[in-house]
Image 1 (cartoon, rainbow, N blue to C red):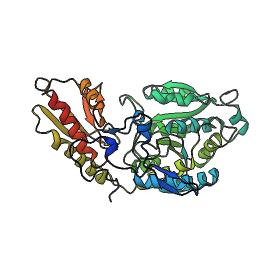
Image 2 (spheres, helix red, strand yellow):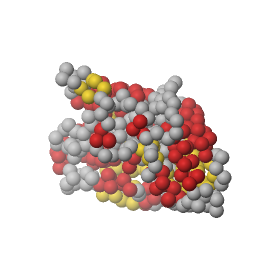
Image 3 (tube, rainbow, N blue to C red):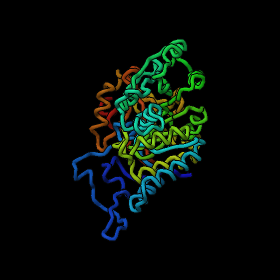
Length: 408
């Protein structure tokens, strides 16, 4: 299946990105409510320069590029109003069926999923306690977390008033559990992998102690099938980022798990006005877009996805392989996502250019290109094809060739 829209049919040289293609997405409703195409270049009007994303689906780069199926679904929802709760119910039911979860809900991102899921575990069905948060008087508010699972986004566990209790061993867990324990938290994949309690064992302890266990699996896609695999692990709650590996709306995410906990999380979220998550709104476009993004992603095999990426990388390599001193290698990361990357290096005795200067030169090129600079891996340069369209690969190769040839 051709699941990515071709941006370029042909080109000569390196074209400014605004000349690559007329986007079908610049659409606006006329007075009759019908969608009409617009030729306005909105970014140019705002004096903003678009770029080709060869770095990956990072938040700072606006997440992943949505597939055409998702864009069409969001355009559909934008022109047809339905009641939010009705749509929420229907989308949640469909996502639950697709993934095998008891229940599911679309959230305003993985971090919002953590906030809402944590609040659900803290208050249960008690609406008085829901209105009370983040005041946790007489509310279970302790969240058990492995010390080596502490990370940037664990602040989300404290938004509703939760207190983090660090543990390092099974003995620590049993000593930490008390009448104030609301939840046990697991990060997948963990930042550090040595000397940690496995997900399976962590879940066993949580089940034995009758404590809900929440898993943040936000970064474990693609492939989309990893969502189904995560659900099968039987965490009480598990969340995913919608706008990265799943190629959904940037400001959307998924929360899946036990039906009772999902129902409590929904009460904590918009449009309910008694909730800690009132501001974490999800639009009709995002509800439908997230569903279709997941649905579409599940039809794409990991083999098919990797073949697409290899072609993109080979097209880049073809543009630069003749340059003396350049080294390239396509490799698979050793992680739950098994993501493919293109490693790019060069002999600095031949090409007198630092990695940081290379990054800056790509950024200042026309068109602008972003790649990954791994500062903690000896300054390696990696390219991702996760959100790269057909045609953009050749342009990226041309931009890289132009920069490297200037210093060789």
